[in-house]
Structure formats: structure tokens, C-alpha cells
Image (cartoon, rainbow, N blue to C red):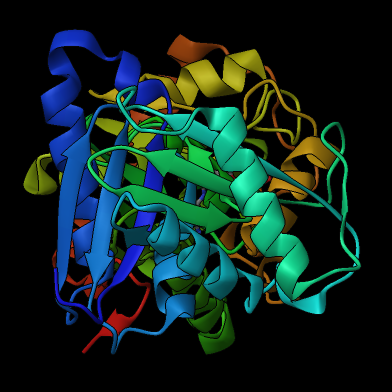
Length: 398
Ligand code: ATP
Ligand code: MG
């Protein structure tokens, strides 16, 4: 560690419970953090239940914070100071922390919280708390102690060195992306599918995305919107690839040949087939969609079972039991909502029938689908797709 490096203490959550697999999970997390900070010199030191991340001084704190707050597998983090285990050094570090938010304002309530992993240290935790409190009062005489419900806390941990920090930030929890293999996310411009991608990334799934684009029935703005959504969820996913599949020909063919009340079901079957073709090439083991039971006409048990029958791969629907309000809450929290509600129609809305069949008989409807002989159209669409790559920071890679 260089003298000018910044240090962050990172708390691991569920990860520290992963028993024999712990190394595997920790290695992934370490790589995921480093890839978000690519371009800066970083070093991660692993200790029981936590990481210490060293980052070169040139990297803005905001960059580190946005990296850590979008990475699954950690429950909290704090920028911290590492000093010798001497009273003088600890007092000095406490005074430094007093110059930074949230203490720098000098008003409100606080407490000091010390812990000793090294029990041979000359002071007890209580004595350390008193030392910290003395320094707090020296700099900010107006602050008052409240050990139950403090507005801010100064922490000191005695390990190989003394580590001091204030105001830990919350992490996302979950499991590091890539510990659960790979899937493909069917990403439309709506509210649901970005949330579905976020939910599966939370459980460690790495994903590529597929968008079915029916130009000119869906506009360039609709595509732009999906590209924006992909860039917004890419940090949670540790980067992703977006496949834009031209879907006008297959849709027009379906529209012309299928029974009107079955068109939506036929679109869904075609999407499933294409998603499986791309999953095959990308070595993805499952599909992810934003469907929720009974939300729209095609999302009945019969409708979902029908589209399932066109997937060789497991179809994960993490939102299946949520209602729209719950999905919207997550969309707001993860920052996709405002983009999702932009008004550009997606292809299904334009092509949807007025009276869709909601309870298809699987066998009958499957035979109607096979009459459409979709395969040549779908192969052509897959071959003509365009891809966009996004970095772990969500930047479009040209
Ligand atoms: P969303 O809010 O995600 O658009 P929705 O409530 O509009 O979902 P549907 O339009 O029936 O519901 O779509 C269900 C799911 O199918 C979507 O969540 C998405 O996973 C997938 N999907 C629908 N349209 C497209 C598309 N044009 N490209 C890629 N995936 C799509
Ligand atoms: Mg939609």
C-alpha cells in the first residue's frame, strides 16, 4: 500500500457463511470489485468476514462508492484510516475523521464504538471509546453522546493495525455475479424486465440481454431506451452484452398467418425459440423474463406454460409473485423507472390483438404455431442481430 492510497473496509454478508465454497465466492467478489475499478491501481486484502480494498489516490471517492454500492455480495463498506496501534496515532486519526462528513458539521449526537480483534492491545474497548470521545469533543465541543440512537458513529477496530472510520454505507447484499452461471435476459423497454435482471444478478447470475426490435413499428427511440436500460443495469450485472434481434419479419409473418387471438402467444413462442438459439451460442443455461402471474393476457398459467414449452432451458421469472407496485418500488430504487416509463411503444403493444386468447390449449396452440413454419424467419433474425457491449461500470464499449 502506498502512503497516499485510499483504504475501504468492506463487510461481506451471506458470503462468509458459504463454508467450503467461501474461497470461490470471495475470489469472484474480489474480481467483480476490481473490474469496476479498472484503470485504477487496486489491491484487495482478505480477512475473516471482510475485505480491505486499497485504491490509488487518483481514483475519486465517488467512483469507488458507486462501484461498491452496485456490487452484489457485500453488505456494507466504509472509507477508513489505517494507523499504528498507538494512542497518539489513534487520536490523530480520530481528529482527521472529524474534518469529514458527517462529523464535520459539528452538530448532533454521536457515539464511539471500538472493537478489539487483538485482545493483547493495551486498552480495553471502553477505554478506547473514551479516548475517541475526548478527540471528538476537542474538535467539536457541541456534539453530544447518545449511545442508543446516535446520528453518527466513529468506529475503531484494533487488528494488525488500528482501523478508524465513520458512517458505513449499505451494500446490496446478495451473491457475487458469476457465482451462479450464466443466463439470458429478455429485456424489453418496460418496467419489469430490468427489475427481473436485477433480481437474478442479486442471486449471482451473469446475463446477456436480448431485445426484439420491430423497426419501424418500434422506433429508434425505443431501441435507444433499451440501450439506456442495459447501461443502467449493467453495473449490477458486472457488465453485459445486448443482442438486438430484428423482429419485424417474424412478427409480420405471424400477424399475416396466425389466428388473431393467438398472435401474442405466437410472438412469445418465437421469442423463446430465438432466446434459446442465442443462449446456445452464448453458453447460457437459462432464460430470465419479467413476467408476473396474471399481469397481462399472456401471463396466465396456461400462457406461461405454453411459452415454457418452447424453451429447452429453464425459464426464470423472478417477478412471478410480485404485484406492479412492488416491482415499481424496486425499479425506482435501482434507477430504471424513469427510463422505463418513457412513452415509446414496444413491439408487442403494437401487434397485440384486441381479444387475446388467455387460456390456450397447449397441444392445439402448439400445432398452430408449427403450421407457421417460423424457423427460417427466426434463423435469419438471429443471424442479423446487432450486439452492444457494456462494461462493469455501465459504459457502452464502442
Ligand atoms: P416489461 O415491463 O418487462 O416490458 P410487460 O409487463 O410489458 O413486461 P410483456 O410485454 O408481456 O409484459 O412481456 C413479458 C416479458 O417478455 C418481458 O418482461 C420481457 O422479459 C419479455 N419481452 C417482451 N417484449 C420483449 C421485447 N421486445 N424484447 C425482449 N423481451 C421482451
Ligand atoms: Mg413490455
